[in-house]
Image (cartoon, rainbow, N blue to C red; front, side, top):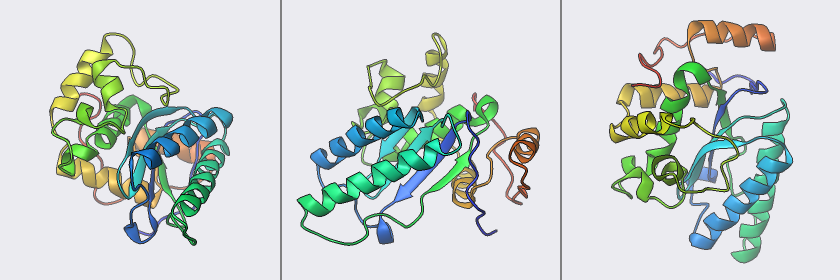
Length: 224
């Protein structure tokens, strides 16, 4: 199914994926990732789009953000993308496009699938076999969520108090392939990722129609 015009719902979490042009590298060393995170912090604060989870891979970025206004997500991504591209072009003495022309995003049903998407994001390094455990990877929010360490990039809590134990248990199990495919499909095509009632709610809120994909949705939510 073809992707649709970007759907943004203020106050709801969004999964964002941005890839390097032609899937080429966008991070070449530790300093590059540090620079990106500093820009993410700056522009997520500036445009009131707090980050709940993130992961930087060599050629793409995953974010879980909650924009306060409909334009907040775009403004945040615009600022980070432009400034980081200028930084790379300057330091690497290059020109041209660094990122794909369009980032992908979808609205997330917080009540049912917030943790599932956060786990998908934070387990990226494990699936890519560059880390044995999610919390061992330095450039994601996993260490903060699992070990309780401070992470200034995170502008909003993914869980409260004793819920950390439940999330840690969730992270011990690998996400199912079906759920990985669902998250990827909904993010790529831009449709709300949630229950049927949540999708209907988004249709009413945004005055749009979101046709459901035949693949379906994950069978389980937070506790899967």
